[in-house]
Image: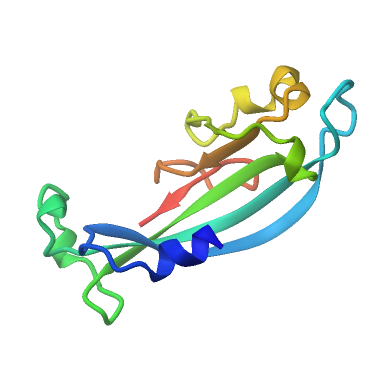
Length: 141
């Protein structure tokens, strides 16, 4: 319900926004780790972002005004994401661990410590110069 209210609440114009989230797969994760809080799942997908080239916050983005827009005056770009979370969300920690990946590779959030304590871990692609492989998180502009 809070997500719906957040979406419907009017806000000031933003320089960037998420315009679409697509889940591409859901699968069991780390069934071999003992003493977890419960079963975990891996959720993978893509996020579509949009930047307003005319917004003051985006003036430092080189050549943004030269990029093709989406018909609404915004420039879109895409990024992969991955979430590791307990299937039973009531067993999850009340906060999310955002693990900044290193060149598209996930590291800390998959450690058994986090799985035993119910952490939800999120990664997102933020580097475009990453090889295109299923194991790496990328950003595409």
